[in-house]
Image 1 (cartoon, one colour):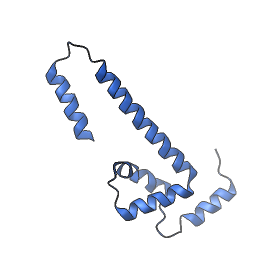
Image 2: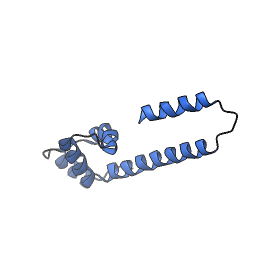
Image 3: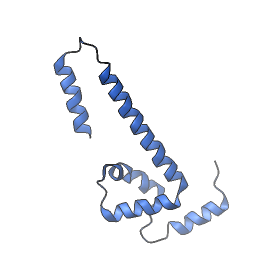
Image 4: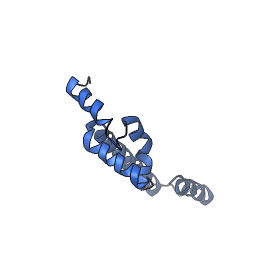
Length: 101
């Protein structure tokens, strides 16, 4: 979808504001933001960007939905684990998931 000239002008001004980040930086910060690991200054910049950029708000919502779906899928898969799976394999998978968090 092509951006209107108004949107382009707004973004040109917006990205010159103090503490404003670009959409690319927004993507780079998203994981740390969701995990609560983003330093206070970067978190403020991230949240300011969210207020002004609809595309990044939509992206964040989709990202969260994807994470929720993946977590639900993982929970469903573990709930339906067949009896014949070796305990050491289950332990290894659970340990890997914990390390990834």
